[in-house]
Length: 77
Image (cartoon, rainbow, N blue to C red):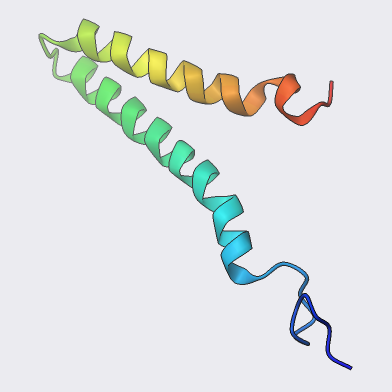
């Protein structure tokens, strides 16, 4: 008898569901790394827009870190 949820392959989680769970964290990590690189390059080359880049990037990085490290999201302390 073939399992109704996995179709007999033995995996309860299909590939698309696993990909959907991994996409958001991977995009968040990539965005933070890109923003940190832009900030570093702007500081290294003494860009005249460094303060604006820093304010913009810090707000986005803070939001991402707040979302992933908040204890209210998972319900765990």
